[in-house]
Length: 211
Image 1: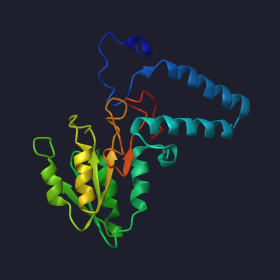
Image 2 (image 1 turned 90 degrees about the vertical axis):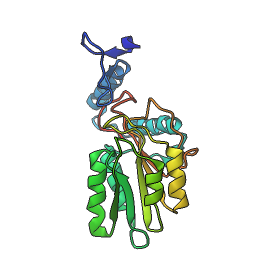
Image 3 (image 1 turned 135 degrees about the vertical axis):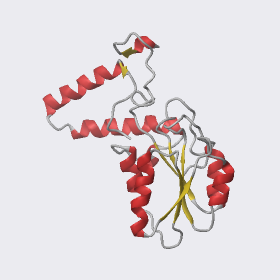
Image 4 (image 1 turned 30 degrees about the vertical axis):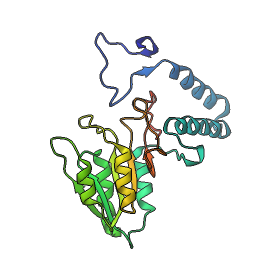
């Protein structure tokens, strides 16, 4: 409902794909955060509780468990941490596309010095097909990235199909769900997703700084 948001405009807000309008219920949370800083200075125990609450809530959205959720301050940072944990001695190809958020490919290219090789799928009329993924995936595929909904044009991919392609190649799949979390059903178990990132800035109606 529009009454749930604080925004001074005479038009229709269409920029939630970049930054959600201010959700009224956040006001009390921000005030509580300010009050805790003033009263306690560094209320780490209180913050740890809230982090676990946030992990539980996000786990429900994607059908995961709390133990499978790792908070970070941005999707780019989270993906960089994932890439830095991979070894490329056995398989070294990372399949990605030009519909990914730009930092995804920047981070992949940075892995070249560690032996990784980027395999870039080019969109066809701003779309990707399963045939492109099938053709690219092979014995050297380490990781396959699949943006769920592209920020460039809203193109949405079938995660289950791409997950099967990755599995058949003996690879893992990474999904950037920043544009879909909060507005599109996500089930990491049904879709056989290994790694998924998202953030609170857009359709989860939060603020920057949490992914």
